[in-house]
Image (cartoon, rainbow, N blue to C red; front, top):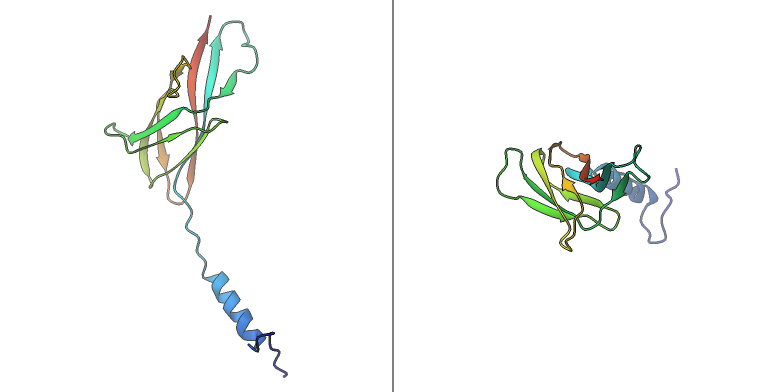
Length: 133
Protein backbone atom coordinates (compact mmCIF):
# COMPACT_ATOMS: atom_id res chain seq x y z
CA UNK A 1 0.00 0.00 0.00
CA UNK A 2 1.31 3.39 -0.97
CA UNK A 3 1.66 6.04 1.76
CA UNK A 4 0.07 9.38 0.90
CA UNK A 5 1.73 12.42 2.42
CA UNK A 6 0.48 15.94 2.96
CA UNK A 7 2.22 19.02 1.58
CA UNK A 8 4.27 19.13 4.78
CA UNK A 9 5.50 15.55 4.44
CA UNK A 10 3.28 14.24 7.23
CA UNK A 11 1.55 10.98 6.37
CA UNK A 12 -2.11 11.71 5.60
CA UNK A 13 -3.30 8.94 7.90
CA UNK A 14 -1.58 10.66 10.85
CA UNK A 15 -3.33 13.95 10.07
CA UNK A 16 -6.72 12.24 9.76
CA UNK A 17 -6.23 10.32 13.00
CA UNK A 18 -5.26 13.50 14.84
CA UNK A 19 -8.30 15.32 13.48
CA UNK A 20 -10.59 12.44 14.42
CA UNK A 21 -9.16 12.28 17.92
CA UNK A 22 -9.44 16.03 18.40
CA UNK A 23 -13.03 16.07 17.23
CA UNK A 24 -13.91 12.91 19.13
CA UNK A 25 -12.59 14.28 22.41
CA UNK A 26 -14.61 17.43 22.27
CA UNK A 27 -17.12 17.34 25.07
CA UNK A 28 -18.62 20.80 24.96
CA UNK A 29 -19.88 21.92 28.30
CA UNK A 30 -23.35 23.26 27.84
CA UNK A 31 -24.32 26.25 29.96
CA UNK A 32 -26.73 26.06 32.85
CA UNK A 33 -28.87 29.08 33.37
CA UNK A 34 -31.95 31.10 32.58
CA UNK A 35 -32.97 32.55 29.22
CA UNK A 36 -36.02 34.70 28.97
CA UNK A 37 -37.93 37.69 27.79
CA UNK A 38 -39.47 40.53 29.76
CA UNK A 39 -42.90 41.66 28.57
CA UNK A 40 -45.46 44.26 29.49
CA UNK A 41 -48.85 42.54 29.63
CA UNK A 42 -51.79 44.87 29.11
CA UNK A 43 -54.99 43.67 30.82
CA UNK A 44 -58.45 45.11 31.34
CA UNK A 45 -59.83 47.99 29.35
CA UNK A 46 -61.76 47.12 26.21
CA UNK A 47 -62.28 43.41 25.77
CA UNK A 48 -60.44 41.86 24.12
CA UNK A 49 -57.51 44.18 24.81
CA UNK A 50 -56.33 45.98 21.69
CA UNK A 51 -53.23 44.50 20.10
CA UNK A 52 -50.56 44.13 21.08
CA UNK A 53 -51.48 42.54 24.39
CA UNK A 54 -47.80 41.81 25.08
CA UNK A 55 -44.94 44.16 24.36
CA UNK A 56 -41.20 43.57 25.02
CA UNK A 57 -39.78 45.65 27.86
CA UNK A 58 -36.19 46.77 27.31
CA UNK A 59 -33.83 47.67 30.16
CA UNK A 60 -35.80 45.81 32.85
CA UNK A 61 -33.61 44.50 35.66
CA UNK A 62 -33.93 40.80 36.51
CA UNK A 63 -32.47 39.93 39.89
CA UNK A 64 -31.89 36.37 41.06
CA UNK A 65 -32.19 35.26 44.68
CA UNK A 66 -32.24 31.85 46.37
CA UNK A 67 -35.70 30.26 46.00
CA UNK A 68 -36.45 30.86 49.69
CA UNK A 69 -35.50 34.53 49.40
CA UNK A 70 -32.36 36.20 50.61
CA UNK A 71 -29.47 38.19 49.23
CA UNK A 72 -29.28 38.86 45.52
CA UNK A 73 -27.04 36.36 43.70
CA UNK A 74 -26.83 38.15 40.36
CA UNK A 75 -28.74 40.45 38.03
CA UNK A 76 -29.14 41.05 34.32
CA UNK A 77 -30.66 43.87 32.26
CA UNK A 78 -32.96 42.99 29.37
CA UNK A 79 -31.85 44.05 25.89
CA UNK A 80 -33.73 46.25 23.41
CA UNK A 81 -36.10 43.36 22.64
CA UNK A 82 -36.69 42.44 26.29
CA UNK A 83 -34.41 39.38 26.15
CA UNK A 84 -31.94 38.33 28.82
CA UNK A 85 -29.72 35.38 29.67
CA UNK A 86 -28.19 34.51 33.03
CA UNK A 87 -25.49 31.87 33.49
CA UNK A 88 -26.08 30.25 36.86
CA UNK A 89 -25.47 26.80 38.38
CA UNK A 90 -28.31 24.27 38.66
CA UNK A 91 -30.74 24.91 41.51
CA UNK A 92 -33.96 26.65 42.50
CA UNK A 93 -34.07 30.43 42.21
CA UNK A 94 -36.45 33.33 42.73
CA UNK A 95 -36.59 35.84 39.87
CA UNK A 96 -37.38 39.33 41.13
CA UNK A 97 -37.94 41.77 38.26
CA UNK A 98 -37.32 45.48 38.71
CA UNK A 99 -38.42 48.31 36.41
CA UNK A 100 -35.89 49.94 34.10
CA UNK A 101 -33.55 52.42 35.79
CA UNK A 102 -34.90 55.12 33.47
CA UNK A 103 -38.03 55.19 35.60
CA UNK A 104 -41.63 55.68 34.62
CA UNK A 105 -44.55 53.32 35.20
CA UNK A 106 -44.09 50.04 33.33
CA UNK A 107 -46.50 47.84 35.27
CA UNK A 108 -46.56 45.51 38.24
CA UNK A 109 -43.75 42.94 38.09
CA UNK A 110 -44.44 39.25 38.74
CA UNK A 111 -41.91 37.24 40.73
CA UNK A 112 -41.43 33.57 39.94
CA UNK A 113 -39.48 30.57 41.12
CA UNK A 114 -37.52 28.73 38.45
CA UNK A 115 -35.55 25.51 38.46
CA UNK A 116 -32.26 25.39 36.56
CA UNK A 117 -31.06 21.97 35.43
CA UNK A 118 -27.50 20.87 34.61
CA UNK A 119 -26.38 21.76 31.07
CA UNK A 120 -29.76 23.31 30.18
CA UNK A 121 -31.20 26.78 29.84
CA UNK A 122 -34.52 27.25 31.62
CA UNK A 123 -36.86 29.35 29.46
CA UNK A 124 -39.03 31.96 31.18
CA UNK A 125 -41.28 34.90 30.45
CA UNK A 126 -41.30 37.68 33.00
CA UNK A 127 -44.37 39.92 32.91
CA UNK A 128 -45.00 43.44 34.10
CA UNK A 129 -48.80 43.65 34.27
CA UNK A 130 -50.26 46.98 33.13
CA UNK A 131 -53.95 47.38 34.08
CA UNK A 132 -55.87 49.36 31.48
CA UNK A 133 -58.75 51.62 32.55
